[in-house]
Amino acid sequence: MPVITTPASSFIDGSWVEGTGETTSRVNPAAPDEVVTTYRQAGPQELNQAINAASAASRAWDRLGVVARGRILSTAAALIRDRADEIARVMTAEHGKPLAESRLEVDASADTFDYHAGSARNPVGTEYPSSHPEERILTVRRPLGIVGVITPWNFPLQIPAWKIAPALLQGNTVVWKSASHTPGVSTLLMDVLATAGVPAGVANLLLGPGSLGSELVSHPAVAGVTFTGSVPVGHHIRGIVCGRGAKLQMELGGHNASIVLPDADVDLAASSIVNAAMGSTGQKCTATRRVILVGDGHDAFLDQLRDRVAALTLGPGTDPATQIGPIISASARDEVDAAIDQAVHEGGQVLAQATLPASDGYFVAPTLLTGPTSMTICREEVFGPVATVLHADTVDEAIELANATEFGLTAAVFTSDERTARRCVTDLDAGIVKVNAPSTGSELHAPFGGMKNSTFSGPREQNSAAAAAFFTHEKTAYLRLAPEEA
Ligand code: NAP
Ligand code: MG
Image (cartoon, rainbow, N blue to C red; front, side, top):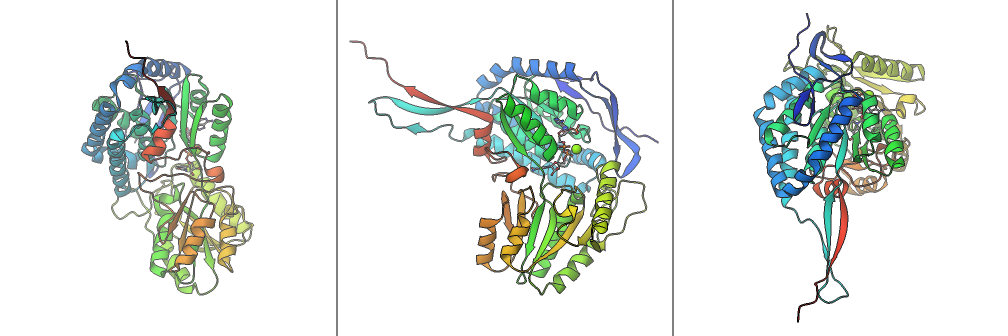
């Protein structure tokens, strides 16, 4: 019996707007006969309305000043906290992640708004000396104008918060094409922003298909684009945005390695790696996909890794006993299952697998594989709870193996030897290297981003200075005094 519990709607120029596109529904991935929400998609007409609204609202939002904008972000943070239970429930219903994880994401998103609100009082420029007496040379930052934001479904509140909070703080207006799988969470964030006092037209939400994202980034009025998602979509966007000379920030997929040395703490390495590989049903860009064991002496570690994977409890995110929720969709489940079959076909073996629940939800069994490095799964991103154990004779060989993909997002190394740890930090092609910690997770204020095909060169995300560099143009002002009147 369909149950509709969650409103979802585009939001343009301060009003909830029913789209002129197709009617679409989002079902609960833990119980696919349950409809979480139904809405009409936005199309080109709504895109133009949103761009016009964002353009008309730009000047007043800029003139308001950064400190006043910061106060509005701080109110948004408080509202997210007030509505944390409601937002977390909708997130679990749409995405499937365990309620406790949804709750952590909501709290971190509120912290993100608070962090950027606090950075409203950071210094805004630099003064340089001049060769002319009395002249002052100052750098000033100006907003880009309209920023196009495109986000994935895996962190439906946190990733939008990383982008939208600093974009607004710096005086930009926003047109956001959110992920189709999580329309209810996007709707709640827009509601929070409007209630917090973000003026009409300053933040606009389009619930629409990927093709609408393509139109958004192609629009000549969109001065900057910030995107998180897959490599193929990212490269498509890069072609458009760079082709027309607009500013671009992107964080894309990963194929992250965790290197384990024989001197690693076995409990720490096994628990961190299972968490990083299987947590959130493996649907984190930073998830550990490959576990690289260096040398011999890993029997205790492997035993523990297998036991921990096999013991994982799957179920709906609303059950407090659930450790691993469903995957996002039936097609994602089929893709992951097919990738495991292909790995076995290519010479892989299953080392451990968790038990599937008796449910018609979109569940995939968390799976630990081993096999030759030539398996496709060792280089292509499979966005689910699957990790492959590989062997290397030396640290050099492990680093070479870790670096042997097109990606370069995160990596982890487990060792008690500081020299080895430092070497890995230096030589691993990854934007984030964790020592004795899971490859997943980051502090919301530290610079975040990858290398190689996991990113696009330019300022990284999350950190306020990096955000200011991306979401503004820097100008240099040369200020001389007019001659004094005699
Ligand atoms: P995706 O398929 O690339 O979609 C991301 C966003 O782009 C969605 O809003 C999607 O809309 C939109 N989109 C789809 N086709 C488009 C097009 N042709 N032009 C413009 N926009 C388009 O990624 P996903 O499946 O949502 O998320 C999983 C991927 O994101 C993984 O590869 C993961 O590694 C990556 N990711 C990276 C990071 C990071 O920080 N590096 C973080 C999280 C996730 P629809 O939803 O309507 O399709
Ligand atoms: Mg996708």
